[in-house]
Image (cartoon, rainbow, N blue to C red; front, side, top):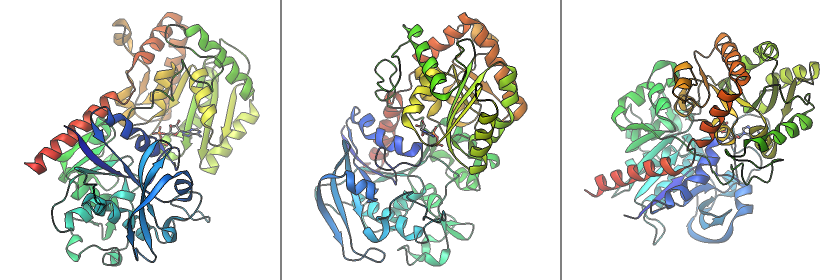
Length: 484
Ligand code: ADP
């Protein structure tokens, strides 16, 4: 059965990206196409989106959408089929999509993303002739009001899915805005958009979508508890029977060590020897000692508390004691950036820290590092460990969220059974991280064990094939229920 699904999101790679969400939104349409599903995506008309848009036609106009005229454009960009909400008074602002130049949230974010939500709902109800989606799939808080507008609106509506990519970002706004953003008074209830006295955009989506997904089964379970629920655990427990986890994949064409033009030496699982040249290139580029015997830990990350980067900093002596090197690429909190730059200045042959965002270096780290460290405190899915598996950089990860679901710990029993793809540690503490570093170093010294780990890591299916089949199954079930 063919289905049409409208995806609604605020980010899409390569046009606009602040995190893994953008990668997923860009990959999903092609992934589900193989399941017979057509998926255009509605995104705000940020300058980068408008610049990238080709063959655009106006398919609907609004005389006034929260303070100015707006229109829906249909077109393509970077091979993606898009609806674009062109509302210059809301979105014609370069740079970070959520933050003003002073670093604070844009003062009108409530209206900007109420507009996105409302237009998602309009498209869902068929405001554009010839386009009537079977499902509307909203992503993260920016699109959280789409299921709410569909729920409270009149007439038949498509089925709705809300996906939580990161519960840490919730979109909360003052209750006084309820009418101004276009919701009826009855929406302000425990079963509706109300969230601790505010309007919660993500809460709205969680409460009112027909189904809620998050990006790994373990995260789906974790967020129903106090520790990882971030205040939303109650709302999620209310919806328990409608909450599930579907892992992300990665684009295995972009991330393919056998064809990757950005790395120094192409390789695959059968030609692992060719990988060594990437390690030399990485060490040379970052000024590390050109020592093939030294275990190189790579890190590619946002530098925030979520990612456990402060723990990693404290673990630098353990990395040194293991005779290992660190190759870090990251950007984020200034204090963390500064700490790693200082550590690199103090020991440039063993520690390298590149502050910034650099896709090409990210590829070289995955291809050249022996292991990839991901000591996250929480991780909805995580993409970097999937890239690491594909490139034979052994992932060393905390046992949380999607990390727990994608990396198989190479403990003694696993190794005896010729299983295991990485090193998994818990709890998320300095002591446990130090032990994981020591364990990794011990595995590294056993060349046969290490090669086995690499081969199994690289054989792991990190593509979108399985996740796409899961989404397709969900869409079909929901659509049949509504039709039924
Ligand atoms: P999150 O979305 O929480 O930041 P993910 O692991 O899900 O974490 O996705 C992060 C994505 O961004 C990955 O594709 C990763 O390679 C990329 N990335 C993160 N930091 C950098 C950086 N400094 N340079 C290049 N790519 C980065």
